[in-house]
Image 1 (cartoon, helix red, strand yellow):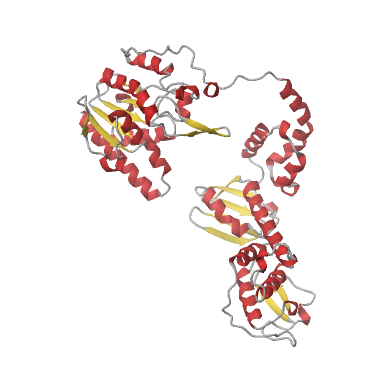
Image 2 (tube, one colour):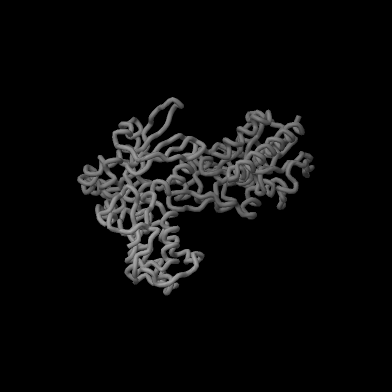
Length: 483
């Protein structure tokens, strides 16, 4: 009997090296005893050391440089993290069989393959539960505020799952304490220390009230399925979840709450779904508006394209009525549609920051959009932005032209391709003409630059910073032209 000793419970590298050597020497699976140092075994004292060869175990020799399929490696890397004591022996048995059955991993009905894949699935499920059920509590140390969580994973997934938390909570220092190993993030790198005790975790903090309030608010008694809920949120995790204390009462009261929901009168549909115009909106008219107030009233009742049907309201421009510079965006976003004002959402916040750096007072400019209603599509309860069509831009140019005619700005800045189409009446390559003044038909200077949302979509930090710097430079140049 050969003894293969591994350094720790998740020593996949050690198992792989030992397994390659043993298979190359022809040591059959039933001739190997796998031992984790510190784990102990009733049979280890009677087994021969791994360097020796037990009689009758050697069948043939092969080069250590053999290869196995990615399917096997993928399953093995996950199965090693399982708490089953059979995992190392099972994986070596599969490796041994792959020598004569290279397509073995494709046979899902094979007992060894099925068992190894079941171990890997259990590990994947445990990693998913860790991502879902870790709850941080506020703490402080010599470096300031930090967050600490106690978690008891079903399998040894802490080190494999730690990078997810480093990405998800990159800007906060945290520690996740578990009985197996503890993970720490210091805003720069991950580190690991030996397992901890539940007493090492901080006690409940004020944040747990928010968790309970949130959970109670999203609980839908009409869709309650206790078996499905406890399968997705196993009771083994409840003692570490602040919201779990609410579950028994929520289940007990579910039937009464459902009856109350059924008996309650129907709510009125949202305006953006029903297409009901805002109260007091002016009726559509073909007469050119004679004031910016008339433009705003006309936008509220506009029916020049179909976008009004799904929008909450039309969003006209705002700012200084005699502004020397006009900024034209694409269309209102979700927050602009609800607030009735242009550029108040995430893109608007970035736009305000760029205006401030460029030295352009927002209240000294006129800010509007090429299209005055929010074009979107529903995905569940979310309204996802859709770029307006050329026909919709053309239909809405009536209002943009009216704003231009009433204000006569010296400079018009088109923020993005849709805005450039609305201002100039033709498609403009933003990247090629960005920052170069263009004389418009009414004598104003036109400037084309990026829309702020373009920078929000950039994932690379360096590219985002460079784009923002160029955007600020374009705004400075446009402001100088308006002087």
